[in-house]
Length: 184
Image (cartoon, rainbow, N blue to C red; front, side, top):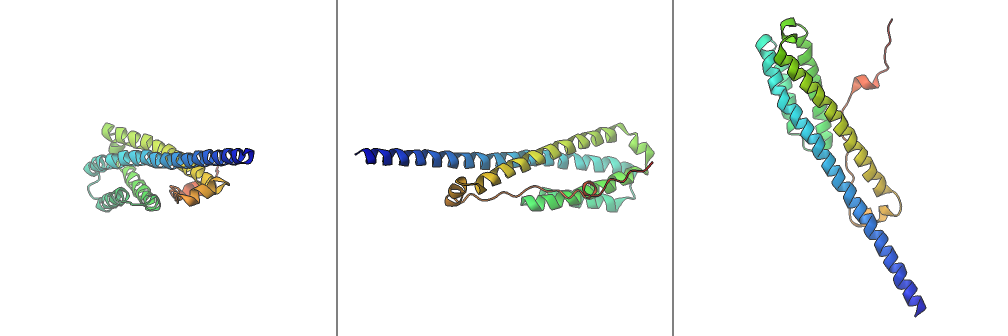
């Protein structure tokens, strides 16, 4: 009889631990989804600013049609990206197109002084910072979820209940990977 009670208590303890691990995995999976939604909110904000920025620049630089088309195409691809990896690739394309747009602006001093343009540029810069923070938070959450899925004994529960890995949101930032060049 005593062995039966010990066995029942042992099974109950294992069950409670398994439920706790399962709940922690569900919590982390939901945090990943939520943090991706926050990244998406900031990206949508960026996408909403871009047409206003393009229209403002168009008023001054009518002959720069190719640049405007690239920005519009890149924005469209970014909006329609399906997976985290596709989103990262689309964001790389959009960032490059925006750099071209800002290079065009350098040729128009009166545009650089335009209050509407300056406000849009400032708002876009603020949004870029929010995107970077949201991306970092998402990737940190994905890392925690991945670790939880891989360590023992939670890896057993993760495999039993088919928890899928999440992709990191990586944006190619070539300038950040190149060595810094210091000139005096």
